Image 1 (cartoon, rainbow, N blue to C red):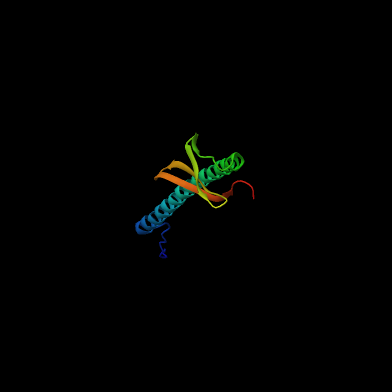
Image 2: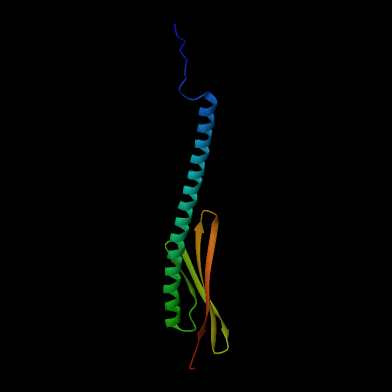
Length: 118
């Protein structure tokens, strides 16, 4: 009677445990990356809204002239503006304030506005 060799198919328990461990680390890395991407996309969208709001308000301030100061609320944003007199004009500062997941954030825009003739 001839001897038969026995061949085993499949994986050992240690191979299965190691592969599942590596797979779980990979899934955690992907989940962390997706959370960061979502947060950055939200931040980008908010910055786009702030830029649009600031640009529109800056155009209004330029049109109103050198005496324009004030504050207004637009949705979740608070917009404040004012200026400091300088030679032949004033230095105007526009601040847009908003709440983020880390607290309050203020973005500002400053420019020189000529006043009077000249």
